[in-house]
Image 1 (tube, rainbow, N blue to C red):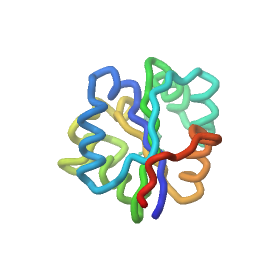
Image 2: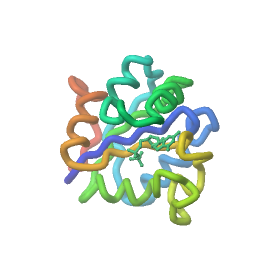
Image 3: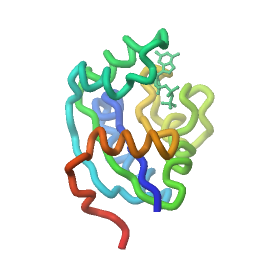
Image 4: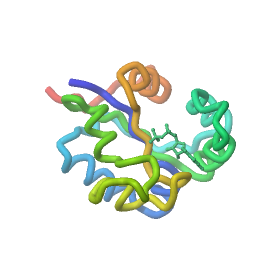
Length: 141
Ligand code: GDP
């Protein structure tokens, strides 16, 4: 069983899409093992996206992640990292496959509704970033 970090970004929370996105996650067979709603500070958003510091969109990304609350969740399943990336769809919603979360809900590449970890090491880091010291209460038996 693998764990991955999901974030429903402010554009998704603002447009009341939390339930719909949770349904897509659960219907895909992934399990919501832990979840909570938080409003990221600028510093937290900067730290979380530090790998993108040199990218031209970094400022815009940090700004958009702090415009309202987000829902951070730990998802569990066999190959959860790759399966959630598939379910999210391509970064640019115009390129996302039909039926994916981003094809269904995203507004633009900047407001693309969800984040998901992209590899085993980043998943470990990102789950720790938001859930260190928190019990992952809903693991599969
Ligand atoms: P992801 O793993 O699919 O989320 O994509 P990346 O790791 O490449 O980028 C992280 C996030 O930065 C994306 O989800 C987008 O919200 C944002 N982003 C990436 N490329 C662009 C861009 O060209 N313009 C803007 N405004 N945001 C971008």
